[in-house]
Image (cartoon, rainbow, N blue to C red):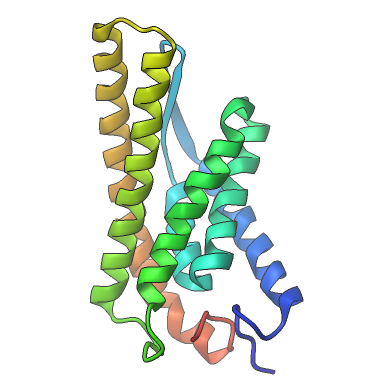
Length: 190
């Protein structure tokens, strides 16, 4: 049975999406939270599996895995106020990583260079969305300029560390498991 996470069997596609969403959720629970005067930041492994979802399942299903896993984490960890935004921004992260990795009909298996590029651009895209939202939120909350600088300084540092962790782990993990998954016909393919 050929399984293609784009068009062949929607039930299998949904099962893999749910399975990776659960892995993303667990990755977010493996984290360290930093309270920031009304703002939130954490260093963890959720983005690792969000990027990996895009690489494994392609843009749409990988984006949903990343977004759903992140949103469920927010709903179950006391950050419910940001769940919808997390759903959207994490979806975009996984979507971008999957789109870049698998762009073009000639791509049967993305090269290491393409996988690195996809992971980095996915992480940078998410980082810009997260930091942009953090800045807007800090300004709208009426924080003093010094508080905004502090909040954004910590968020930039934490986001940079998360992006590095995500890319350094997701890329070699994908490279290690892609051939067995392709052999079992459960890796995204064009």
